[in-house]
Length: 243
Image 1 (tube, one colour):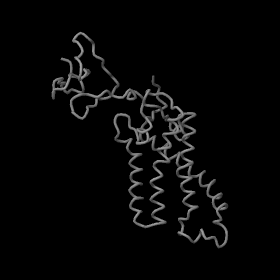
Image 2: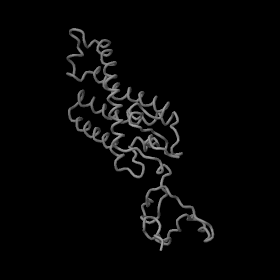
Image 3: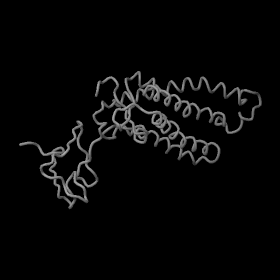
Image 4: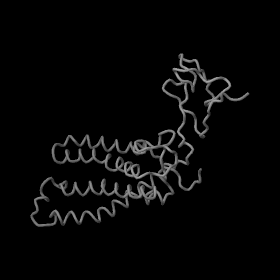
């Protein structure tokens, strides 16, 4: 006897008075002689909020999804490269141009360490440079230096596996590096310039950013981070051949 469809769960077309799967709520169900379309993507069928009618799995489920540990390694490598070259390039320019190295500079005494030039340098190194670094490489190659080293590539979810267009290549790092960082620096400025209680907001935003990255661990079926979901992208294993 063949196994029942959809992971062994019996399918009841008449549950809750809803029309059979594949039929319109305003029309007639397909005739018994008409073959019904089936999808096989190598993943379990997911169920909608009613718990009985299966939703179609994403076509991108057939792509060779990248392992989480290699994605983490690529992210750390990219961030380290940007931080090293960013601080080496931006910090001396900011110190010289804004007079932090001059004797008696007021910038040294106002706000302690967190002067406006330092905040500007941090925002440039942690947000603007990573955005430019990733957007240009994704638009040209679909992978950063870190992803290239770890054998990963970013592709579109729909159409599944298509290379990134320029808009998507820019939109993804814009969410990742600019969107995530705006909240962080907003509360950082409030904390050091206005009132100390904003540090709680800084902590919450930092935790939220971490969760946005870690979302890929438990996301199903494509293991997308929050910025991947918004951009409609997925990270694949570029060392695996696929069609």
